[in-house]
Image (tube, rainbow, N blue to C red; front, side, top):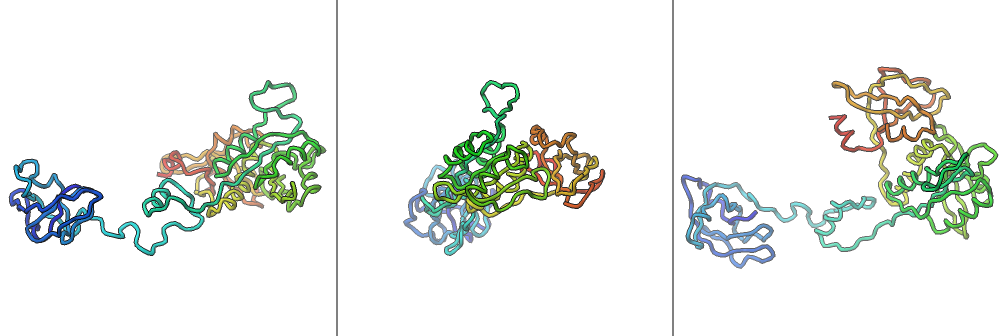
Length: 368
């Protein structure tokens, strides 16, 4: 606060009708130390960020003095009374000696950078971003930007998973696709010898051309295959050995929605763990269902819903097409309605749990 450092007892009766005059003994700029202590009847002109002189216990802002009207720089008229330590920041107000400022696992945000700089740190030890190799499989795939041919589809999964990887704090090393042969898949995976995690999509089901499981069993270990959820049941996890290095591999399903939800449920947590982050779960809210949701096979179901506010009620409207191939449903929805395993139906007007994709401004507006 730019103003005058004063003794509280000198100005406790000051007002516009009772201006109290003090002798100005020095001016203190930010970055300079005071040269004089304040005694009764004295004031120091002080700038924001400057140390407060000994004796002073309040600062009166310029605008509450007669500085603009006074012809003398040696005296100042105080027009208001102040309270103890008004406009003074005490030592240790933000951080005190011995305080633990940043704990292990804290994500480095702009605010954290600012706090570290404020206590003199120009370098700290951090977890590096984990390197993620991304590979889709399928003879039917071509890359975005190429001319679409009959019988072919664009490789959207690699782009989607790469984008999610960056969003979750990982570093995408390569994103490509391989043919549905053990030889081509092994060749492409060999290029990932320097990554921390490999994420594949497709090739983990029961078809004749689902070769990811075969390559994983041949070149490493498969810890599990298939999870009790829908979408994303055919998910594989294991370690593959490349150049004598064991690298964890997550085999996502090939359907685009299944791949996204599986990566959200497994890949995101893996990246958090590798990054040294504290594990954070998506927020879950209560919402009233606008239509029935049927769970035909008893698995834990994640149904795409649009959460909104209607009058005073938060509602969840299921998207019409819940097919795992309808990728547009992932940006048309903003949450996943959770149907627990063993539950056949979530009924209209029932209050349900909805896992929100992210806590953005749109969602905050819904809840407020």
